[in-house]
Image (tube, rainbow, N blue to C red; front, side):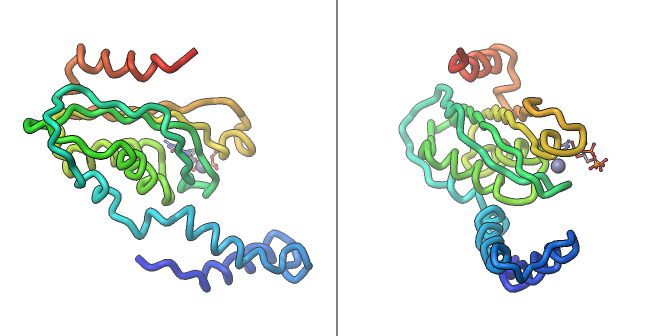
Length: 190
Ligand SMILES: Nc1nc2c(ncn2[C@@H]2O[C@H](COP(=O)(O)OP(=O)(O)OP(=O)(O)O)[C@@H](O)[C@H]2O)c(=O)[nH]1
Ligand SMILES: [Zn+2]
């Protein structure tokens, strides 16, 4: 997939006209160009294989849980192309050889799947599946908490409603391990 900036500029100009605006008035003249740049950033994940980040591993012989909590996350809902944003928590149990990946790579993984038209459930599952398949860890728990602007600023208009999704794989399905991960995730709450 290749990003077509010219196509985006054209479409934004047409959109402005269709909603009853004048795309040639001063404030809007550069808007197609600005939006082409903005969308290139918001949808950069479409041109990426996010799983590649977590294939960079270190053999440190760590067999216990690793959790990165409160990773800021911005995505765009595929139904309305409006933002949903919040935090992702990513926990995993290293596989047999105690291989871990860089902590920032977990955030890069979240970014790669968030920066595309998404639904929160798929985003959550894709992060979990990439960790199982690419890092080859023995268990994963991903929790995403987000507010959807399509629910806040339009439609049902319920600002503040938070959607929480989780995806659990492998040994983190075990009740005790899962409870430990959940309590570590909630440990940051006041
Ligand atoms: N499951 C899920 N639903 C989402 C997500 N983002 C947006 N939605 C929902 O997608 C649904 C689309 O519903 P439709 O009835 O097709 O569209 P709509 O008429 O604009 O719906 P309303 O938002 O209720 O006005 C809405 O209920 C949204 O809240 C998401 O990440 N996951
Ligand atoms: Zn939506």
